Length: 457
Ligand code: IFM
Image 1 (cartoon, protein in one colour):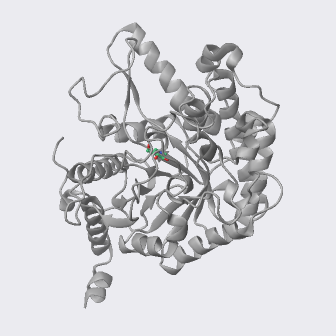
Image 2: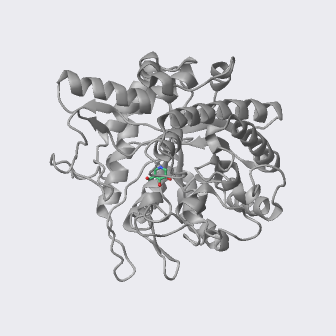
Image 3: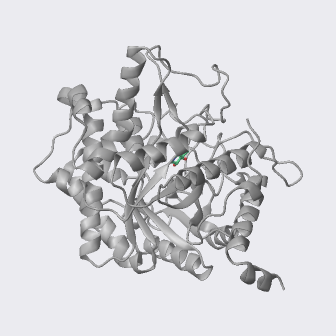
């Protein structure tokens, strides 16, 4: 891997650019059955034999539910502006319909108030995949009724917390929920049916638009948006087959979500490809999906290389890869942002997730994760590159604050800038966290030299 840009070569970002760290409820909270929480589809999925690499569950995870104050102090110690977290729907509404669970709501209230007391902006995600299991029993996201249940849930959370939340994201990565959850079945709820998957994607998008309308109607002042996992998709070779596959994969990953959200239409080539598996829609759905947003969140990890010969393995092609086997390709982030900016009329964008899993070693209380530090700094440089070329970016958030439950990979893959010893739950700042903290300190020193020197005096 190339050397990262030294800190003093990373450009100065605007003073209002938001720097953060991100997590999600199921991946860190634990307390899976406490204080009235209902089961989610991930609680149930983890119990199926063979679906999680290390046979683990989210029952304890990082035990964040019981360590909230210490974890908030940890976040504050990094000097970030924002913390992106998600609310577990079954913790606040155990069955996804009907009664609300007061201890669950109170937990998130403590979380939000704790952030504000430490001067950190709360960025709340409503759905980071942990649908109440009771809703799956009646078809989950494949059932149009779940759309209306989600709107109820969104309005309840916003009524309770919205006055203190900077930004609300409806869904995190609908492509993952639809495709990995319902087409390949690698993720919860483990369904393998393309028609269901496309219907799920439509319902996720529709519920996003309707939730935005409902939140605005009730006077919610938080900024409202969605988070998509996006990547440039390039063909492995110039061959017509590879080009066609790249176009198809781009259509399913990028245009299938971006076009309805910003152009009020699904891409015609993908509708044709899907044929009988295309989603059933009602009049007005596309108009509702395209309800204007205040921001778009982009999660970026790598590019995709499409090949008619099957899976294109970056490692076999001599490319640097992370522990997930994903190519390290920071310039893909600049390419992606320029392309989105060119093809769509967008609100400002945030990088809501970016980071990497590497094999870390905790030795004498330290983790020298140079590869992760290099990854993060080179991606920050890639964001700056896009901004220099005119793209409106408002923030960058590292995935993830803590090592955590990496879905079907269990706890084997570590994405945190903070190491978690799962036996003791001890947290240790990795070198990447120390680097990020120093980078943010330098950014602020450049922007407010007077303030920083006064603080130091
Ligand atoms: O851990 C996930 C996160 O939940 C969603 N985006 C990608 C991350 C890394 O795989």
